[in-house]
Amino acid sequence: MSEYAAEGLGSIGARIAVIASRIISWLFSLIKPGHKREVQSAAITALTEMAYKTSNRKIVDKIVKGLAEALDEPDDYIRERALRSLERLITKRDMISKQTLSLTLKKLQPLLRDEKLKDTANLVMERILKIAQVDEGMEEVLSYREKLEVNQYDIDDIETLIDSGKQEVVAEMANITRRFSRRLSRCSPPITTQEGWMRSG
View 1 (cartoon, rainbow, N blue to C red):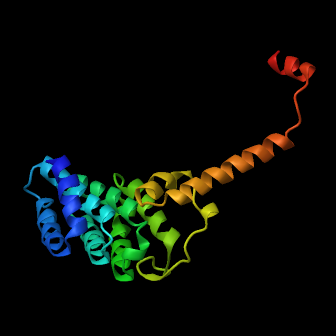
View 2: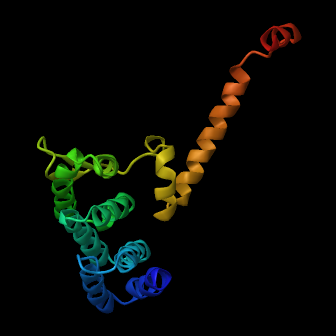
View 3: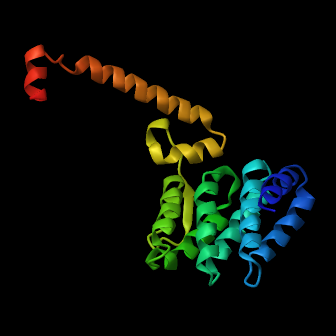
């Protein structure tokens, strides 16, 4: 079911907005308490895949909003999975409204103090702070930041960038790393035979 949900429903959601909207509502109903764990897992996987594959802003925003609301669920498993999905989807900044991002920010607050979930919640918070300016109370998004330059991404962002279709940023990061390595090797003094012998000894 997980494969069917992720691939089959994901593809439908990317192409047919009306059907996707109904499917989204149905999938969110499946993550509620009372459903089997594998059903809940498949539903969250499908929702995440749909958001990745579609270029429809309303669909992405609806899914992100629903995942943010899922952070209120009493089940730690559901909240953990929702956080993981949000961590990756937040990079689709051009498709998420400030209202939805503010909602996500607000729902994160209690989880930042939760012993089981605080690490994952912090990862989502870091994603949000990278793309948006927030108020002092950390509950409202004031504006989106200018798009990040290549040198503002770090190694932890690579997987998310690839998933978001930003391979060109990853390629540029690799080029910068190669250029830096070449410069570093030119600047490093060569090791003489005696120095090498002394170090090995």
